[in-house]
Image (cartoon, rainbow, N blue to C red; front, side, top):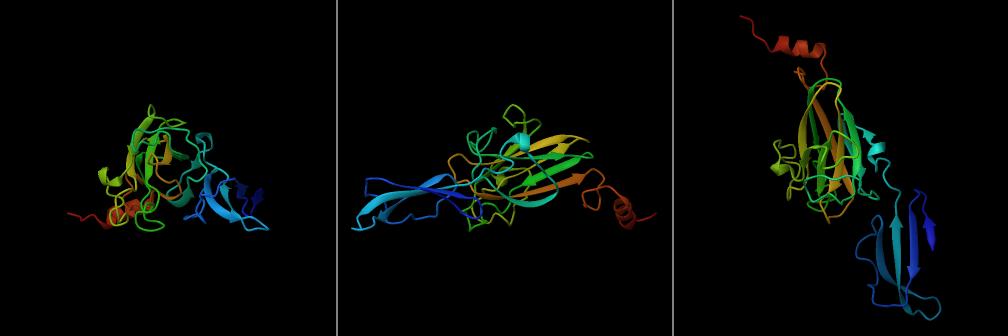
Length: 231
């Protein structure tokens, strides 16, 4: 049978002739994962194998052509229901599900992207083992990749220090951008690991952004004036 809940999630169920499944799934059904269990038949109570699959709609930014506009700040999103469109050189993630973001710079500066907190989000070391890559075209592939990071502990920036408290599995990277440059951000997961929810943090440091508020304005002049000693 098929059922749809109020959130639009579909559940497909069925029965087989076997009887060797566990009495109930040990974990909740995840996106596009079939969970086997035993069910009691009406009437004589005979146990038969049944299953239920929970099917979610794909994320709106599942394809790079629909990459979500990225802005400075933190977002929570998901890889549930995503397909694999692109590829990257790290994390064995070429065949992993991916979602896409697009960041365009107004001025030259440093784009910093991380997934800090993702791997510990539901509990220490039980979250998504993320992989991040930056690309100068879409769909993002190894050929147009400009940066890639699997585990932040091997990156040049220690963005997740004190946040990824268990095994280091969050991702972090940075990229020097020119004025009016566009970068595609691919978020994926390590090959064979569980897809799920992730955190994506984006920051941009402008050249000349002395007060670190992500733009160049009078505040930067005030910062210079207040931190300059006359002679």
